[in-house]
Length: 182
Ligand SMILES: Cc1cc2nc3c(=O)[nH]c(=O)nc-3n(C[C@H](O)[C@H](O)[C@H](O)COP(=O)(O)O)c2cc1C
Image 1: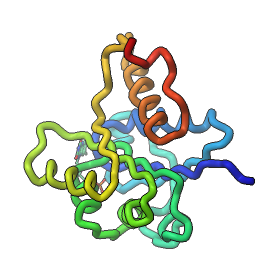
Image 2: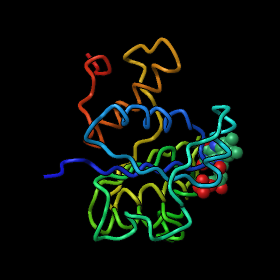
Image 3: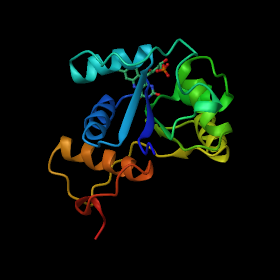
Image 4: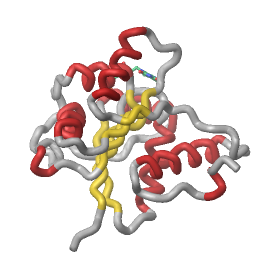
């Protein structure tokens, strides 16, 4: 039996491209995880601005024949990392107007895991309501809010700890002891 987990990683145009890059690196080390990468056009701009290089190619976000756009082929887990307020609003409204929005819709209707990592501060009422709606529909809202109790000594360590926590949430990997509260 094929036990490989199919993960959709959707990168949108919020700050935090470093999280997505680390997610890809970490997943590449897991033999039983296959990551299917999608980026919005703005995500590519933010990636270039924040990381000083081009984002990886990824799959075409403007096509609906992407593998996980159908309930008959839903992903094992989908992570939107980082999740812009624009994408959050579209997901909450169920627009399904690009592959990312459609796949998120599919995850919800099929009762499959959808993890959203919003990054914005402060938040206005509509954004809070959008998060509430998505949470009520079954999404996990995991704000990009790294913990400091593991005493990270660098930006990389901070990013790593947060991505490790996402792996735990996504059921991809147990949380390393070093990142646990003790
Ligand atoms: C450098 C940069 C940083 C941004 N950071 C954020 C952010 O942290 N959160 C957010 O919601 N939008 C942020 N934006 C704005 C979004 O990119 C913009 O709303 C865009 O329309 C989102 O499109 P998308 O959801 O299709 O990726 C940022 C834009 C740029 C250029």
